[in-house]
Length: 276
Image 1 (spheres, one colour):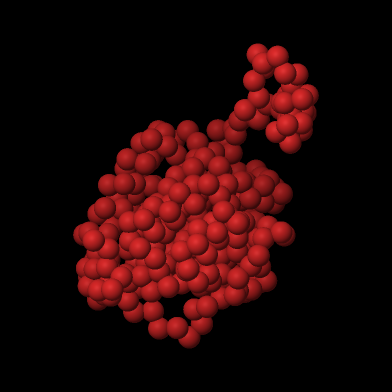
Image 2: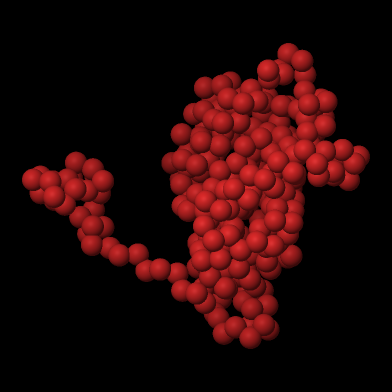
C-alpha cells in the first residue's frame, strides 16, 4: 500500500490513505510457541465447556501445569474470537456504528431448504499458527453451502462466502447471524439487502439461536481439524474442502432421521427456488 520508493513523501502517502504515519514503523510481534499451545488448549476447553469464561479456563490450564493469569487468558480468547456461551446481554458485540437487526426466528418452524440460512466464524488451530473459518449453513438441512478461511477477522472473507452461496444456491428467505461486527458491517448486510433477504440477528441472551452451526464447529474440529495438524492455510483449505464434501454427501445425522444434509436439502428445496 505504501511505496517507499515513490517520489511522494511517506507523510503525504499516509495522508492520502488516511492512515497513521506511526503505523509504518510498527512491527507485529509473532505469537510465541507457548501461546500457540495455550490457544489450542483453550479451543479444546471451549468446545468441551462452552460456558467457561476466562477465570474457569485459567483454572483448568493451571490444573494442567500451566502458569497463566486470567488477563492473559482473556487476551488469547479475544485473539481467537471466542467468548463464553451463557445467558448474558450482548454475547457478540457489534460495531457501535453498525445497525443491529431484530431476531426473526422466534416460533418459526424451519422445515425446508433455503428458508433460513445461518453463518458463524470459528478459530482453527494449525501446526504453526491459526486461522479463522466462516461457514454458511442451510438451517433445515444442516448443509454447508459455502465457507472461507482467513488469517484476519475482517468482513471481506465473510462477504466472499456469502456471495458464493447466493450465486450457487439462490437466496434464502431469512439469514441469521450473531451481532459480530463482521455480520453487522454494511458490506455484509448490503449483500443481503440487495438480494431482498430478510436479516435476523441473535437477540440479547439468546446464545442458543445459532446452535446448529455451533454443533458444526464441534463436529468439524473433532472429526477433522484436531486429527490433522495443518501446516498451512493452503493445506487446511484442501483438507476442509474434502471434509465438507463428505459432511454434505455422506455423513448421516441423527437429527435428520439418519439422512445426509444433501438428501434433506435437495429433497425439501421448493421447485420455484431450485437452482439449476
